[in-house]
Image 1: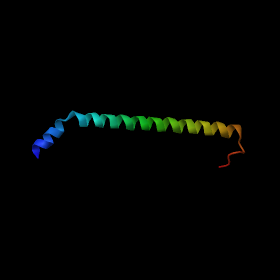
Image 2 (image 1 turned 90 degrees about the vertical axis):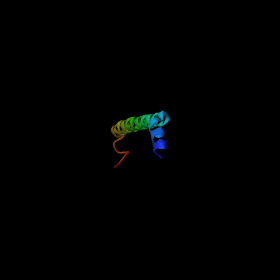
Image 3 (image 1 turned 180 degrees about the vertical axis):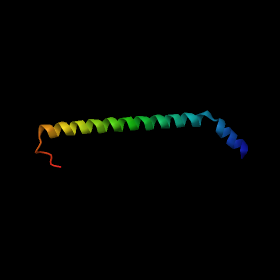
Image 4 (image 1 turned 90 degrees about the horizontal axis):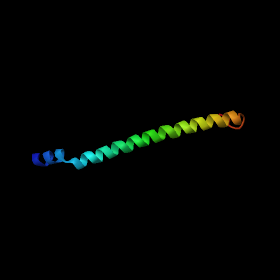
Length: 56
């Protein structure tokens, strides 16, 4: 059992997978932030253009 844990600890493939997962999480977080920013800005422009059209 201890040998299996040591070999797992030294395995570099798991580290690479973790790095890709963290990179994917970072890309998703940045994409959502940018998407939200574009949505907010476009919503403000629409409300400025047609103030009575979007009530709420």
